Length: 66
Image 1: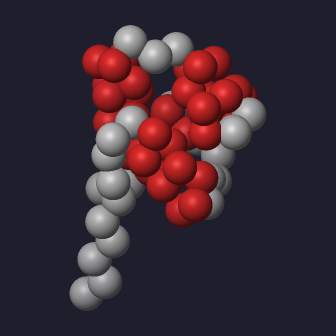
Image 2: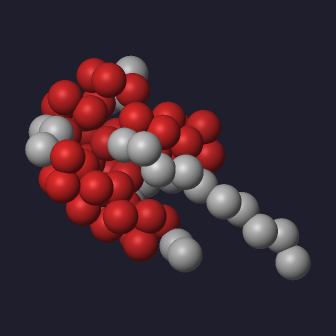
């Protein structure tokens, strides 16, 4: 799964929960522009930033090293 797919999953879950981008950015302590970039698959977010967003949405990130 690449960052574009992660962004789509975050956006879909956020919309499903009825949370605006502004609300989610405030919940996780991330700038609105950063959240917009994550949802659109742009930028270069850290794993910590992605984990914070996913956790706030009740999701998790699983990394598998082969």
